[in-house]
Length: 143
Image (cartoon, rainbow, N blue to C red):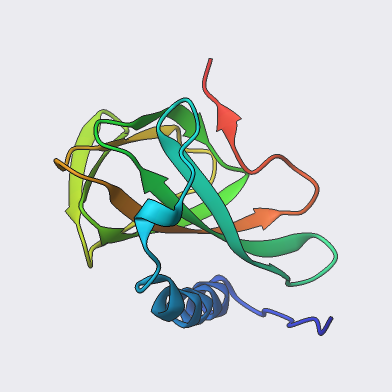
């Protein structure tokens, strides 16, 4: 596996955006109905895992939300960029409600607790790109 050395946070975000666009192009045509939803009504499918250096990696996950499904308050050991592929997803972060529709995105800083809920009548989906420290859990549930 080739290692890409990132020299600045701006370069890191640009690289993540490039990865997100490449992987997202193929995911837009994926049928959400092919997903197997868990007991919480959510299906997570890892699409990309790329090592930046010995300490950091980018991970991209397609998250499908069944009708009314929500993911509880949680944080990540690095930044998340959430891009809504279909439907409408409502995020709670820092006491603010942010509603995104297909084609809109949200930057979530490292360690910031947030939740996500499908507020569309049908299935909603997001593409979550994480720029995180390696060997740490991607999702840390808030207590």
